[in-house]
Length: 311
Image: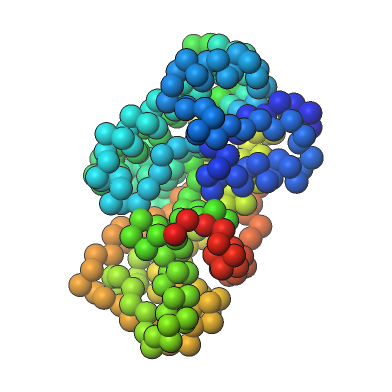
C-alpha cells in the first residue's frame, strides 16, 4: 500500500472508521476516499456498485456497521441483521468486481460463543451457541468473515478480517442506556461530580473481568494488518490484559476526580464472568497496543468534556 494509493474507508464517521482515517492521515496517506451515509447508502447495491465503478479504490477498510447496546440489539433484531449483511455483501462484492487489491473487514468479539473458553482464540468461532441478545449482529459479522474467506477461496481475493476487543475513545457513545461500560462510567462519574453527589451506583458485583482497547490503537493494528498480513484466518486485535469492573470504576473515578464513594447494586446482573480475547497471533507478528488503560481513560474523558461523543 503506497502513500498515494486510493484507500476507501467505509464508515468513516463512526468511532472506528474515524480513527482509521486519522491514522492514515498521520502516516502520510494522501488519497483517502470517504462517503457519509447521506451521500452513499451502503445498503443499496446499485449505489455501492456505481461508487466503486467511479472511484476504483485500491484498498478498502470495511468499518461500516449498524451498532448499538444490548437493548437496541435485542429490540431491532431484523434491522441489525439486514443492515449489516447488506452493507458487507455490497462492499465485498463490489470490491471483487472492481479489482480491489486488498480489503480488511472489521468484526466484533461477539462472534464467539456465549460460553467460549477463555481467552477466546480464533479457532473457537462456531463451536457453540451465541449470546441471544446480540445474535443477529454476531451472525452478520460471522457472515462477513465467511464472505472474505469465500471470495479468497473462489476468486483469490486478498480479503482479510480482524476482530477487535471492547473499544473506547474519541467519538464514543455516552448515552446512559445504550452505551458500553467505559463511556457510561465516564458520564456517571462526571455528572455525579458536577452535581455534588456522594455516591455513584454501578450495576452488579464489580467482579466480572473485561478487556479494553483505545480505538486509536485499534486503527494502528488495522494498518499493521493491511501492510503485513495476507492469510485466510481472521485475527483478534486485543491487549491481552483484563481488569475487573470494580478496578475499572476506581480508575474512572480517579480520572474524573470524583471524591465520593462507589456502591454496587448486586441485585442487577453481572453478565459474562470473563471475556478476554487471545491476541497471540497478532502479537507474534510484532504488533502490540501502545496506550495504557489509565492514559486512554484520561484522553477519553477530555474528549467527553469537549463534546467529542454522542450523548
